[in-house]
Amino acid sequence: MAQAENTARYEPVVRRPRSAETRARLLRSALSLFRERGYHGAGTNEIGAAAGMTGPSIYRHFATKDDLLVAAVLEAANLLAVGAAAALHEPDTRQALTMLCSSFVEVSLDDPELVVVFFYESRHLSDEARASMDAEANRYLAHYQRLVAELLPDVSDEEILIRILAGWHMVAGMCTDLPDVPIATLATSLTQRMLVTLLSAT
Image 1 (cartoon, rainbow, N blue to C red):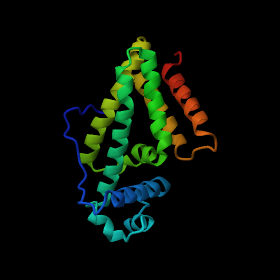
Image 2: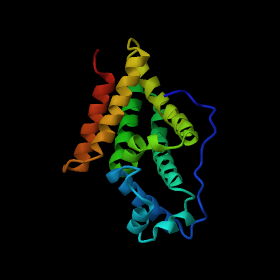
Image 3: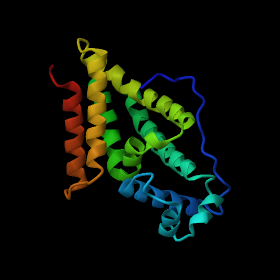
Image 4: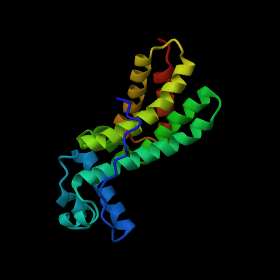
């Protein structure tokens, strides 16, 4: 991921909704279909129908289908940032990393559709939107990089990056088809596996 700290944040063109509930219903329908069929496999008519609306009525709330995807990706980025906030104030490095992993897993399991779309469908965003999303991702990534580097000072930056991406995609991949086990058990296991991936001996 290229550093893009000074990139202006892209915002989707959102129409004035008749109600927040309608907008949320459209977004949820889109997420479900994007996860199931991919961005290009989900048409606006299908998204509208799933939300109990006609396809063209989507454009009363979102200017384009692309902006619907942008809204979903932004929501995921915001949730991950909120989850990371508590970890940033934890003075113990190992505990801070555990909290960061735990918050990532919690967000993922609480809304797997959102996380799957964030990781696997955001590649369909426009270049302008992707630049902003890369900036968001880099800020989130930097938290992991700093903590892992403090715990493993002899591990290269390249190896740390690989471990972080492997941990994220392990969880995101699990969210594409969650196993039928208690969420609490799954959350504990995935958090531990993330930590093992990040901190295992070389």
